[in-house]
Image (cartoon, rainbow, N blue to C red; front, side):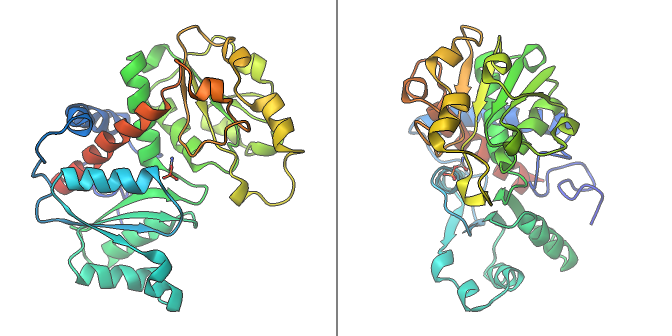
Amino acid sequence: MANNPQLDANGNLKHLLSIEGLPSDMITAILDTAEPFTEVAEREVKKLPLLRGKSVFNLFFENSTRTRTTFEIAAKRLSADVINLNVSTSSTNKGETLLDTVDNLVAMHADMFVVRHASSGAPHLIAQHLEATRRPNVHVVNAGDGRHAHPTQGLLDMYTIRHYKRDFTRLTVAVVGDILHSRVARSQIHALTTLGVPEVRAIAPKTLLPSDVERLGVRVFHDMREGLKDVDVVMMLRLQNERMTGSLLPSPQEYFKFFGLTEAKLALAKPDAIVLHPGPMNRGVEIDSAVADGVQAVILPQVTFGIAVRMAVMSMLARG
Ligand code: CP
């Protein structure tokens, strides 16, 4: 496999596995490609033929509402055939390996795999396997792997920020919460730093931060009142209870007291600050309902933009 497994020899997008390693030009190209699709995503318009005759297989080995559904909508709007593999009744439960499942689906003429998996690196493994078995026209999109990456979430978050704030190079952005277990946070931080955001803040208790988090280019805060001061964008994260081992927090109530986003804490940010959350939200744990449903929240627009961004990624993969 080439040095950057996501790009082909001409620099076109071949797989989307992580934002780490994507040049800023490519991230910007994806956001630009998504712009005209926003209208297609928001209104009832004719389907586009960009994936006509292609088969997109959704392989979700973990739960999902937003990502799986918006990938399906996006693929259908591009005229693809979409097959949602029901993992709970698939032959992986009889001992078939992930790569044997992939080989069988390729034999059914799969053109693209959208993969969510609890194991970090699973989409990368599939991409390597396709490369090794000489299937250069089959593409892989990572829809979230373990703690590693959730690149389309990071991209739709960048699209949302650009939509409301226009210029990345003048922003202060806070990423708040369970950064240790969050693939979303890693993708967001890589995207923000690559796009030239001058100050990315990581706000979390010490127990929910990776030990080497500063190497990602963030400024660390353990006090929300300091970290939120004068920020333009607040990106909240879900507490990833399913990935926690041991007791990293005293209680959800205690967490909410110190790291939950309330109207009082949000008032420390700039008056026109926007609030993002990737969902699913734990109301009363990481975010207060008054903020989640308030005028500064752009949480539902994020979901709608996700359709356009996923259309952009799939059309660029098919084109490349
Ligand atoms: N943000 C996100 O990945 O949501 P789902 O788990 O519902 O796909």
